[in-house]
Length: 142
Image 1: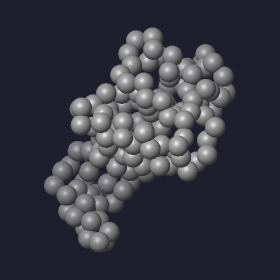
Image 2: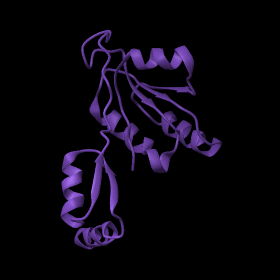
Image 3: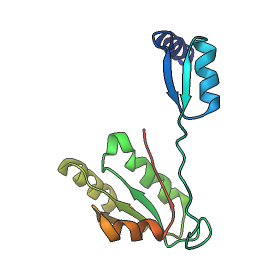
């Protein structure tokens, strides 16, 4: 199946001439499939501020902040992986979503044996504080 998918991707690349890619490696892959391609590299990085409160990984919790959507965001997979990890840091889940998605999350959290705290929607200073106090953020996706 994977070979068939690659063929479809290559065929799709031939339909376009201009591409935005995340790095030079992706640009090389696009140009291998479409030699006439014009690629613009726009990195998906972040600027690390000089005044970080501590070393990377030193924080009070693990943080998920985003839309509550089980199917697309894979929060069920995150909770399962977190339970398996044995991490001593609590997992904070912040975000909002449709009522049905929040109910699904509540059911999953009710059966979770690890320390997971659902904060709901955060904004302003509460959002900034959650980010500052995080050892790291997790961004699951399917």
